[in-house]
Image 1 (tube, one colour):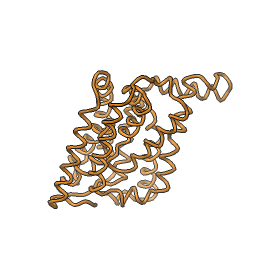
Image 2: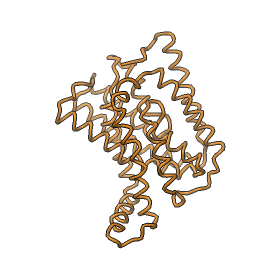
Image 3: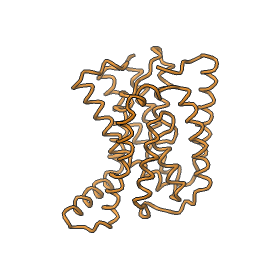
Image 4: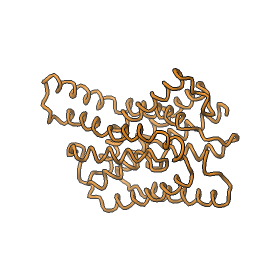
Length: 280
């Protein structure tokens, strides 16, 4: 693979990471149509996500600093545990545990068995329909200040579903938030914050394997191309965050639901006629 393909996949990562349409599915699918026809790989996906999550940190920098400062302040007894920012800090930690635990337990399946386009096509459609139901029946009343520990853990398990390609991390958490009665913006904002520990953890772990264990050659990209893709993902992802939050402030998720269904059906057709292969 070449530099152009790496930049293209970085662009795809940035465009899709924060939308409820599954960035990992798009990287997998687009990789099939590149000249090499190779799966970019779970490691490449995890590392490029560092770029998009860095965009989250930059975009929500003030909120993140406030939450971290308050959380450490509570440990020193300077702030009560029921302070909204302190509670948010604990909620992000608790909500991150399910995806970490399940990611470790099912690492082999995530990196191999589940990377199958039949699974991706199915999850795109099924979870797209679930998102549609959640958006239609959700009360859209609760804000982030109403987030409880119980809801935070449920958010965490919903995020863990993103370990299955095609589900979408943001899609899973946003769907859970809508079903629990949160507004579209509140569900999306918490989805962004909740992703930071898990995505950075996965990305840094993959970097460790690449540099310390010399596993970079397992995927189709070298280290320089992966860095390029990560930078592109950061720039595009930052722009998408602002657009997405503005869009859902006045519109429903229906456009993303229809897109997921259309893409899933297209994949079924391509697979059925052997235009593309399901696995790596």
